[in-house]
Amino acid sequence: MSRTMSSVAINLDGTEALLLPERAVFLGSARALVVADVHERRSESSRPDEEALDRLGRAAMRAGARVIVVLGDLTRELDELDEAELERVERFRERIALPIRLVARHAQSMVGRTLPPEWRVDAVGARFALGGVRFAYEPPVVEQAPAAHWTLAVSPESFRSVPHERSDTPAFVVDRARRILVLPAFSRFAPGVRFASRAGVEVFTVEDSTVIDPQGQGVA
Image (cartoon, rainbow, N blue to C red):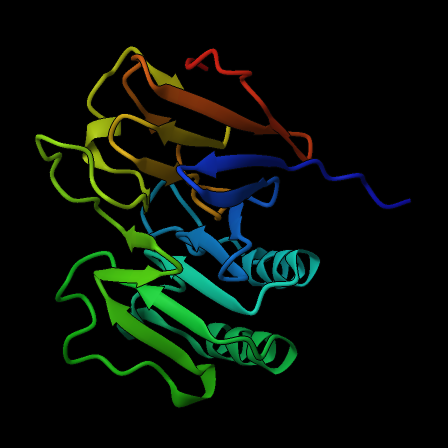
C-alpha cells in the first residue's frame, strides 16, 4: 500500500509555492522543483545518501516538474567521485531527462571544474533567478528595506546563530520579514537548522511524509 503524502501550499507575495514532504519546494508558475544539498558533504560524522537521486526523481514526477533547481551539493566534490557514483548519476539522468540548474555553494566553486557531459547539468553559479524568485546557497545580506523578490536558500548563517533554537526534524523556515524561504537539506543525513524565533518567521516541519502547517504560530 502506498503512503499518502501531504503538502502545504503557501503564498510568497503572489508566488504560489508548494512545500513537499520530499523536502522540496514546487513553484507552480515555473513548474520548477527546488531542492537543497542532495548529497551531504563527506565528514567523519556523515555518509552519502545513496537513495537521494531516486527520491529526487520520484518527487519531480509526482510534482509534474519541468525543471529541477538544486541549491548546493548534487554529488560529492568532483575530485572525490568514484565509478559507482558516476554510474548512479548517469542512470538517474537516463530516467529523468528534465533540465537541471545547479546553484553552487560559492561563486567560485565550479571554476575550473567540468561536470560530466552525460549528466546534462547546467551550473549557473551562486545566484540564479526563475519565475520572479531568486535562488542562492547563502542569501544576500539583509537590506534596510525588504527585497523586491523572495529568495529560496539553504541553511544561511543567520539561521544557525541562535544555539537555543534548533529544528531536529527536517523543516522549511519562512521568514516573511526578510522574504527568505530556507529549505531543509534533501539528504537524510544532514543536520537540522538553527534559527531565531521572531515575528514573521514560520516553521513547517516534515514528519511521516507530511508537512506540518504551524497555522501562523511562527515558532516550531
